[in-house]
Amino acid sequence: MEGASMEASRQISSIYSSETIERAILNMQSNALRYGITTIGDNTFSPYFFKIYQQLQKEDLLKILVRARSYGRIRKRRD
Image 1: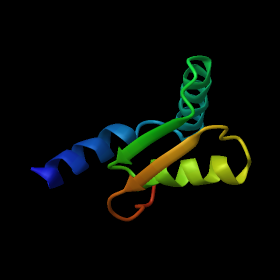
Image 2: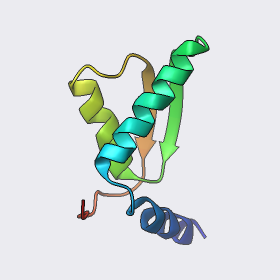
Image 3: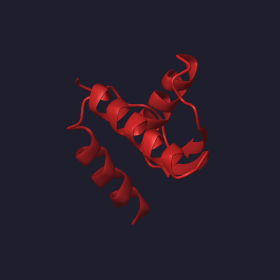
């Protein structure tokens, strides 16, 4: 069941570009900060999303603390 869930998540998320995901994360951050939320948790099935969090942190764009973990390895994506 877990494998099927991961595969479904992978297929659905593969239609979004990294730019779309980055915009969504930064929009979520803006909304969270507006309500005083400074920390979130994300137990994502997508190691690709985890990598985007890391890149945003490296670029100093994350202003909230993101406690995240991911399952599996990053597969090649088409963007």
